Amino acid sequence: MKAQRHYARGEPKRIGNVVIIASMLLSLLFLSFIKSRYCGSSHVRSDVHLNSVVNTNEVVRHEERHSTDSTVEEDDDEEVQINPAAIGTVSLADVNNRPICFVPTKRSETCDAKGDIRIQGSTATIFVPTITQEHKIKPYARKHDEFALSYVKEWTVKPSNGDQAPPKCTQKHSVPAMLFSSNGFTGNLFHDYTDVLVPLFINTYPFHGEVKLVVSQVKSWWIKKFMLVFKQLTNYDIIDVDNDGEVHCFPRVIAGPTYHKELGVVPSKTPTGFSILEFKRMLRTAFKLERAEVVVARKPKLLIISRKKSRRFMNLKAMIEAAEKLGFEVKNAEADMNTDPPTFARLVNSVDVMLGVHGAGLTNMVFLPVGAVLIQLTPYGNLEWLTKETFKDPAPDMGIHYIDYFVQLNESTLSEQYPKDHPVLKDPTAIHTQGGWDALKSIYLDKQNIRPDLEKFKRTLIEAQKLLRSKKKHHVQMH
Image (cartoon, rainbow, N blue to C red; front, side):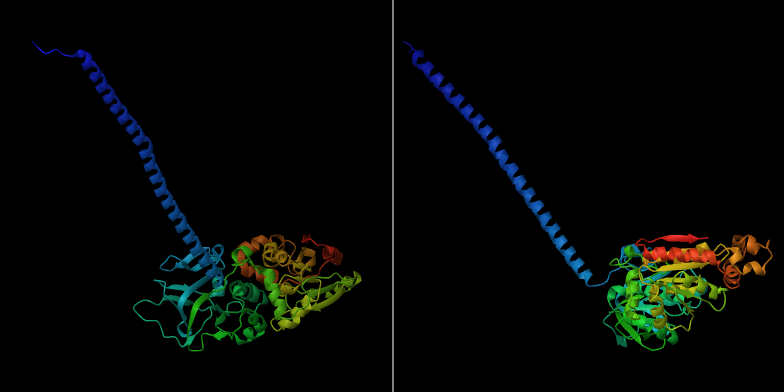
């Protein structure tokens, strides 16, 4: 007899097995869920952690760079740097592509080199270790004027790391050098200031005297004339580089004064934002001038700048009498090459109004106190462009009120020298165009004298009195 299956006991077993299997499957599903949920999160946290490390390192590196930059900036503050705004066109760069020579404006070129810089006057050479090619420069701020530069010695900026070793140092210096020529148009007061003294100030003022003036083509009489100014620019003796037979070694050399504009300084192009007012302050110290600003007096002082040759006042005595009747204390003086700068500077600084025909003598406006009035008489001949650029435009920056006085034909002696229908009288612009500067100068500047109309002259002086009492800067035109 076959054994019987005991289904009654067998079904519970199958059910138990199913339960067990199902439980196992559920457990596996649960474990898979747990793994996917929590183990996955673990990987995310690891990624976050790694990203945090990278970001932290970036911050650290950024802070290190910032710290390094700050250190460099602090170091730079200790040494005068070139203002990028003053560079203009680069004419020579070093091996690191840093500008060495550059043209800030068409009027000047400046070379500024650092390192083991050597100057040899006998060969007119500046040796620079960081350049690979030579460059020529004439260190005088009139680059656009070939005639002026024909009087200026050319210097060579030369690599010192080539096949031929540079000359050995015979004089070592611990402060920078400023190299310039005292030739060109020096001797004319306007050019003394606009071509040399103001540009020199632009380059040397930031050094506070800790710079040496290295002069090429020394005019001893000219250096002596402005020695009081040079003593404000440098704490050291001037070096006559052409004649001392030395090889001077400097940590830095600036060759060629930097020109900004006529008798002016552009603050945005300077390292510290200084202006022509600092130049005037320097002159007050140099010449011991008492007045920084005008203090309006009951009897204002008028200085008439007269001339002995061209552009003379033909009725000077009547002009003085008319001014005195209006309440002015009048002084009359001529400024020429033989004028003693300190004496004349003190005279100009003592007055409230200065008046003169266009010419180099008006350069003495640099000594006028802030709030003073400058009256420029523009000779007949469509010369407004010339008088505007030279003296009218610089006046506001110097804190000076300005009045234009345009000389009419009836006030000019040219009306007595030419027929009424002559082109010199009828069409001055054509004379300028056809004959250029030589014709302009020989006719309208050298042959012309002035006889101001006295009524017009008095109206001009009354306007000057109003400006003296005004706190604003004005340009007034008297036709």
